[in-house]
Image (cartoon, rainbow, N blue to C red):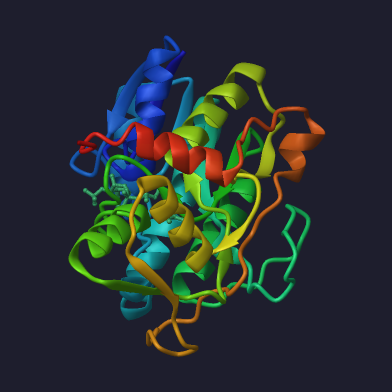
Length: 289
Ligand SMILES: NC(=O)c1ccc[n+]([C@@H]2O[C@H](COP(=O)([O-])OP(=O)(O)OC[C@H]3O[C@@H](n4cnc5c(N)ncnc54)[C@H](OP(=O)(O)O)[C@@H]3O)[C@@H](O)[C@H]2O)c1
């Protein structure tokens, strides 16, 4: 099938691109120089020119502090852009895959969120991503919205630079002690595993709608760091940061673990445990000596 990947040079988009090409699809990468998600005309022209059977949209304005500083631009990119994309897909009969976020929840549930839990976004980024979800589901029935969480991949996140695993390994090399918060919980997810799950869903023609797509299990950032250092053979001293030690300007959920309930219902959940994903990430690191 001919598939467009929007944000194909991003952390997640690049793995989706590679995986779909390896699966034999004809993939058209649309990077920021070829499509502007804040511009309806640009979206329409780029999709018309590529004329795909399916679109995967990974693009977003997702630097949380920048979204807070410029909510209008965040809304254009994360909400109105996906709305325009869904409208074009509806007109052309194109199936739409769209990447969303665990941040749509406030974290108060303290047990894994399923797709039927009510979102309660805490910040501008999360509000605009949730609005994007609503616009897509209102505009075009043939869509899958995939909420992902705590992602890391071999290509650095373009909006934030690097990823948590690489940051931990760099700090371990530079310092005697690394301090990490132990009161925020997530399911860290290797982007290659999300890409493989997308491939599976496309091949199986997964039912349209909303999906949680995260690695199995959960951990705090501290536990994630401990596993990174253990697998990498680092002897750096790891300590729990004191509450409030790292000042954060923007509210984030303290607990954003998702359950892949809809994938499980359809017997399509291929997401491995987060420790398994981390092990494969470290074994396949391009910079590994
Ligand atoms: N990173 C996380 O931990 C995380 C967690 C949950 C959900 N997500 C979601 O996962 C998705 C992918 O994240 P990622 O880490 O792969 O991001 P990334 O590495 O920053 O890549 C984002 C891609 O989108 C493009 N882009 C940004 N603004 C655009 C615009 N206005 N028009 C067109 N293209 C634009 C970027 O191009 P340029 O860099 O050239 O602008 C880049 O190709 C996003 O939808 C994000 O909301 C991420």
